[in-house]
Length: 197
Image 1 (cartoon, rainbow, N blue to C red):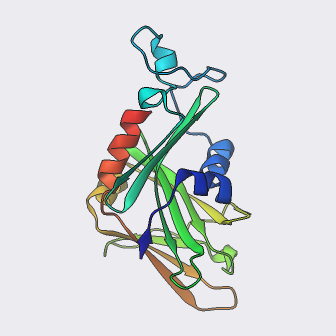
Image 2: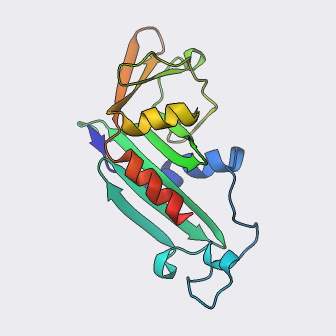
Image 3: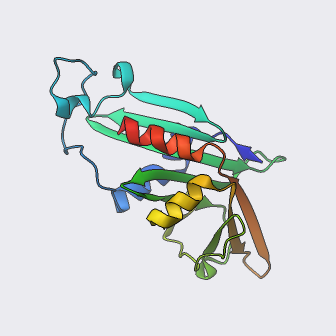
């Protein structure tokens, strides 16, 4: 079942968004070193870009099964569309995804639980379309293992109109496991992320 994820949980508990952006920062109009300034008509455009609505330092909104989360600190603003799944019994996070629009593409990171055969990678499938080639794990952090994801313009359009994204992995020691991520609200969440950047 898809659960709600907070930006703080991913940034602090997993380091997914922060770690992924630090390793491979996406293009942005933000200039390094700019101080965060509350949005105001008298502020220069470059400084207004680094602030969230009403000068807030963080923002969290829900769109279907996705959340939009932003964090603005010291002139650096990061926003993403987020979703996670947790184990119903243990309430531990087992699967999460962070995504953001980069032009006409969608890029982000998957966070998978431990206990997987990392050398087998992750195979993604949108609805019942043919699965994509396996993606490699990039690294593991305290909260799980990270898999960078990137969808080209055609795949992004397909993803925005689809119902589910399936992720198939191999468990360490053999056997397969599949996670299903609801895409309900993703298109709207990505539009909001683009507007906030």
